[in-house]
Image (cartoon, rainbow, N blue to C red; front, side, top):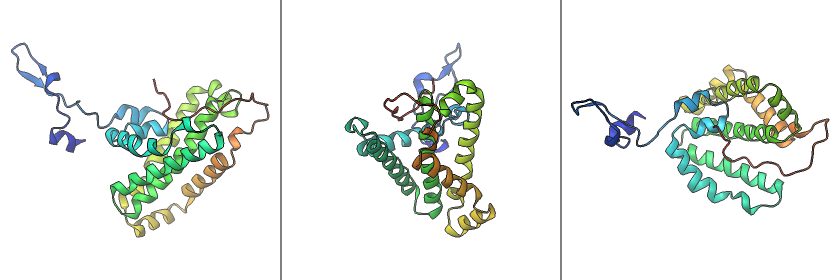
Length: 221
């Protein structure tokens, strides 16, 4: 953010604030929105958090990589659509890791974030499916649901981001052992149960048949 401002890319002279004498009292650097910290910290959904960090980079990754791989209108088979979407998301995230550099820590962080995004997608699908366990819980305890989602998303962003900062494989391994592998094991188990086995969609109450909502960009307004 500071680099963008220092380079002058975000400077917007037309929106500078002036006093009665016409002197500039406040400079505007909002031409390019780099980060939206309000959305990043307060929005419960993990994907929305990511979309509002390095906004221009996220837009480019989505426009030139993700959307070139995945077009939901091309698929009539729901299972195939979801598989292609998941592969497109993982590939886009890993290309983002490669864009940062070749340190192993980058790929460890982005790989785990990619898995967490898949989990978030499935929770969102079930939240939008009337009659599902997640939908019923969200309807009855929306505030609690949002708090829990924000805690989980913030934890995933920060904890799995440690490898990104320590970078080398040796340091990453020391860090992983220091937490006894627990958060990573939990992530992988939840991924298998929620995404691969679809336990969230198994409800005692019979649900009405219908298309599963396509998750692209959850609305935040």
